[in-house]
Image (tube, rainbow, N blue to C red; front, side, top):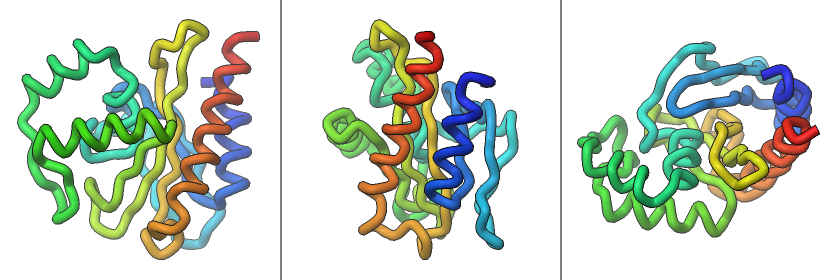
Length: 165
């Protein structure tokens, strides 16, 4: 986590929003945003993989067999009106995310909260964790999601570089 902290702070400073390092469905580290109104979780908090941006990044970059087994064993339920709760739609979104390099949560876990995340990979390309930006929809609307995704990708690459030194 020490390897990730500087990159997380830079991402927070660039976005002004709370950022997190997430492994599987567990928040490992968080750097709170600079805005007066902040979206924050807690270190140690868990969220369903399919309804959060970092969870989707983890699912999207898992090996096909692991993802398929997880999807087979998991009942997808709705938390909000925008939660993706059917397997085919989720699989299409995860495939698209792999092309983009980042994932998006459009108020799927919590009403009014958007998140964007990118995977952190080891030198062999295996998933280690994900880095995410969390913000109210008013500050992270649809038209800003791609730019936030690129910021997350940059932070993930910085963390990967630190881990490889």
